[in-house]
Amino acid sequence: MTATPAPARRRVLAQARFETRTLLANGEQLLVSLVLPALALAGLTLAAVPDLGPSRRVDVATAGALALAVLSTAFTGQAIATGFDRRAGVLRLFGTTPLGRGGLLAGKAVAVLTVLALQVLVIGALGAALGWRPDPGGLLPALLGLLLGAGTFVALALLLAGTVRAEAVLALANLAWILLLGLGVLLPTAELPDALGGVARALPSGALGDAVRASLLDGTWPWQQWLVLTAWGLAAAAAAGRWFRWSG
View 1: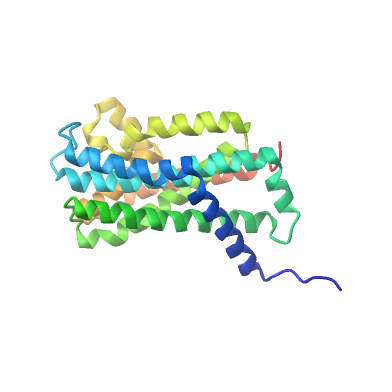
View 2: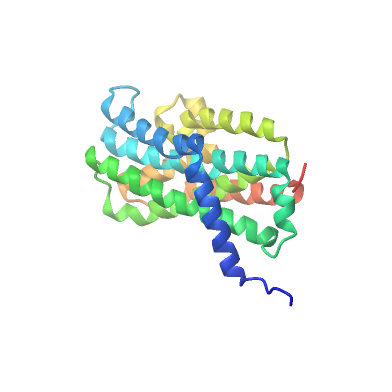
């Protein structure tokens, strides 16, 4: 008697649960995803430097920590995990199962959103304890910005993980995390030197950070920053679709 594969939805959800448990059980990933954004929030709120602009420090710091959470989980975590899965042959193996390549990617996407939801709850609670008071009208656009940023950085993660060796993915993903940290994620691009601020605003890091800050601080819908994120996301997705290697 031939076994019948489970429905596609159940296969994807099962893979998403596995991916989520893997992310949360990994000590290094948990450090990057939750501990470091929380420390960044507390440090920026309680310290007097660097200059975060005219808005309340806790409000700017919380928005930046939320953007950092997206960068950590959607980009750094996914790039490293996918890169080593590819080297170990896991991606090629899953591609031959009923789950398929599309189901594998869908499971990873659901896992990222699950972890991101946990991060938002933890960082939001910590921010509230420190005095964070977001503009109520900006909560919806902030959520949309976080989701758009997550999609963009997942596409960038897959592009990196599918085109270079796992060891190089590890080094480049961590280096990018450090560099993008100061290019608009935690610090408003308006507070950076003119030349550097212009570069940061054109990068997905600056677009994400500024979008979340604009929504939570001023209650605005940051269409310009969303356009930058969309352009990066579409370009990265197209490049990943063209050059992603499932083994090697």
